[in-house]
Length: 211
Image 1 (cartoon, rainbow, N blue to C red):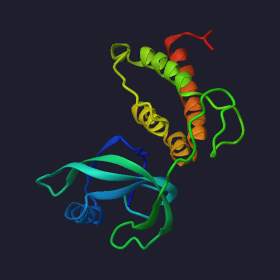
Image 2 (cartoon, rainbow, N blue to C red):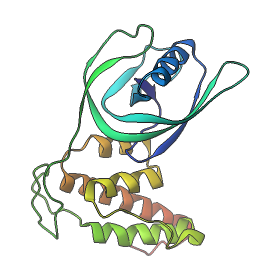
Image 3 (spheres, rainbow, N blue to C red):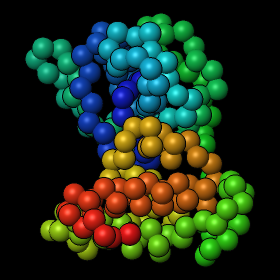
């Protein structure tokens, strides 16, 4: 397990620089094995030195590129492959380890207001189409040259992860989205986060009257 100050989502590529001795041991074992490890957000503490407190939902990662530097560091690129729940933390000997299970979303995505979902709270859920429209507006404000270039998948859970990976929400908001269960509930949280980002983007543009 690799506790970090950043949330990794499935499908998202994360660059890593490994220099602590314990994680260099971990990376060497990962590369000698199946190339997979877990990433989890640190709740309290630092990435360096240990003694941190960690959240209990993270992401499985697979190494897709690696390079060893002359001074002994590892430079990695890893891609998220699926959400995981930490069932039990083991001793950090010589590096953080845990027993995990996969997190799977159940239930269909809601097709409109009031859509039902097994992971929801009973409230109306935002639809994928509504989020797409807001994402398009957000891209138009933040990166006009990329309008029309952001290709988002149609599978709802993958859609949520793709939007989260593209916009890089704050760590605690991202963790909330990662840990939410149920397709409809995840779309609901994503809609809130995109709305918040859109409000900030409009204000920075000077569009104070926009809703």
